[in-house]
Amino acid sequence: MKILRRVIRAICLLTILLFCVFGFLATFEPLEGGKHLLWRIGYGLGGVACIVAIAFVFRREFRSRSSQRNPEGVFRNQRE
Image (cartoon, rainbow, N blue to C red; front, side, top):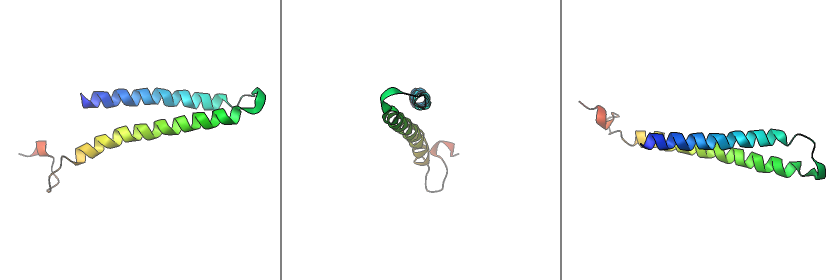
């Protein structure tokens, strides 16, 4: 169940990331008033935040796997 939640979180963050990438690319079209730089910064920060959040979601998964090892380096559920 935990894996399913992590996958769902990653998919949600990935869709937000794709939206930020599309928005960032859309700011290269000519805009009136010169506000394109603010939009680029906003979309860029949103995209970077999503990348960090996705890395954090998967980092927690790897950390929990490594904490299941005993001093001999064998997973607890793999012992004979």
